[in-house]
Image 1 (cartoon, rainbow, N blue to C red):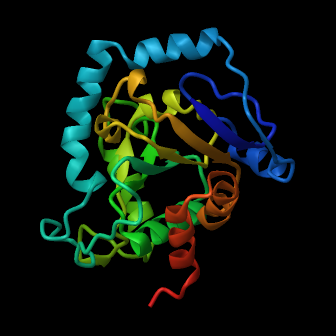
Image 2 (tube, one colour):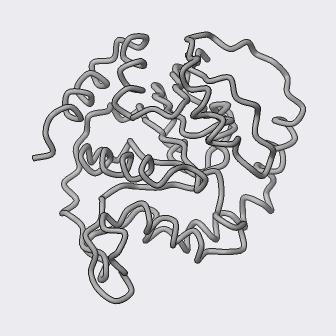
Length: 249
């Protein structure tokens, strides 16, 4: 597998926490393109072993199933959140994905910008990915609140009391994807080609894409895809960029 990276010089996050976002923002100007060497990392292996354990994955999947209506909202079934009709586009090929790796520690403005971009593209193969649940795997409410804070356009709108206009954007919880693509800091954007269909959800390390490009740093999706386009020469990425750079209407 070949992974191109645009990485800031940021310390690796611990097993339970992402690296400090402020440090990432300070270091974002020192970006270089490189091909990372294949190295054995004991901490990464131990983390992957925990994430891939049957018991952990079983509990995680139960929680994900409970959250699915919020993670991948169906506009027809959301009584209190008003979304546009689900007219999805298909900029990417069926075996391609764009993953936007995020966490609750990121600035709200960055997360909302990602949601707005995904709402504009409406491609089911482009979505945000979280490492885990906000506040731990046993708690659902903090994660729902976090997702609402991303998707609801007006922060003063309370979906409990009235309908709120919201972005149409999918958010998955998939720690395995963080391990597969070596994502240690957020935000990070990965463009992957040759993806096995099972990789859209809880997959195995054998399903990693044969060709993937990773960009990390406090940058917009637009800029990240511009960097990826230079390396991948992908016509699909080129079309996505053209869409993002047009007006919203």
